Length: 119
Image 1 (cartoon, rainbow, N blue to C red):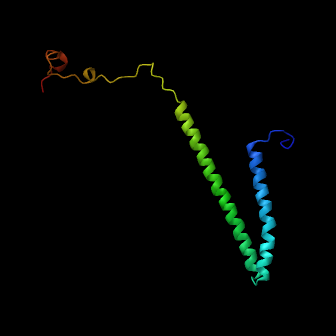
Image 2 (image 1 turned 45 degrees about the horizontal axis):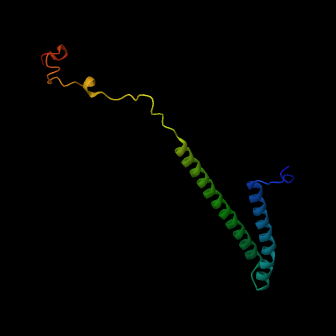
Image 3 (image 1 turned 135 degrees about the vertical axis):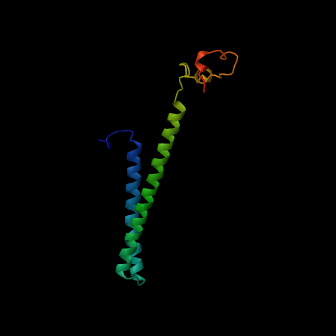
């Protein structure tokens, strides 16, 4: 598995760091709540405060994860734009306005039967 490999990947390291941070927070949360209750904070308010802090940390993590995904997606799009090759060797269908809409009053087309109809 991943724990037996010598070179651990980025996701493994991020998970390890997140687990370490989570453990540190859990170890610090309990003494702080005990201290607050000793100072006179009701137990209900302390548990609500604990839940609020946990939810804010989860929200912060999701916010960070969102922006990481946006940056990765942006880098991918820029990479694709840089690597996009334009094949300019093939002829583009150029618009020929003379054949499409010739000027019937020009000396070249003045006697052309296409323009001989009477209005």
